[in-house]
Amino acid sequence: MNISREDAWKLLTEHVQTESLRRHCLAVEAAMRAYAKKYGEEEELWGICGLIHDFDYEEFPFYKNEHDLNIAEGHPFNGIKILKEKNYPPEIIEAILGHATYSGVPRKTQMAKCLYAVDELCGFVMALAHIRPDKLSGMTTESVERNLKKKGFAAKIDRGEIERGTSELGADRAEHINLVIGALQAISKELGF
Image (cartoon, rainbow, N blue to C red; front, side, top):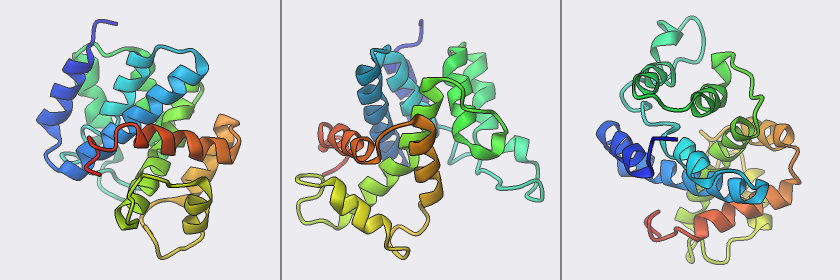
């Protein structure tokens, strides 16, 4: 792969201005690296996939259905055009398309399944960390599970996607949550905690 993490970070920071979205992308990068390590895959490649998965989100909001303007003009479709121009690997492009359920692109590869499985869960773990006195420190799978049941907490995070992602990955739910928590704890300073 001729794309470096530095190139990916530059791309992200050119297109993402909000600190919260940058931190989300860092969280997903960490979780993807943790899964790459677990599966014996290329950590740099998987990490870059996680880092840039939402790089076009601010500039090109996604459209949830065919009645919302032109779905092909939203996230991640415009970002994919940029990635192709910059010669990003096809497996990254396929995984990013697959993480958007409305793209119609099936998640066939382990990388694509992992990206989908960690995306919403990272958002949820980050939201939970914001309300905890110890932030990410000492967070448990049980506390994540307990708060997932609270519909009013982090209501914009799609619990259905967390469930489908875990199922598609074929992961044990507790192990999956634990891996994501551990990955985020390892970069807690970069995440602002």
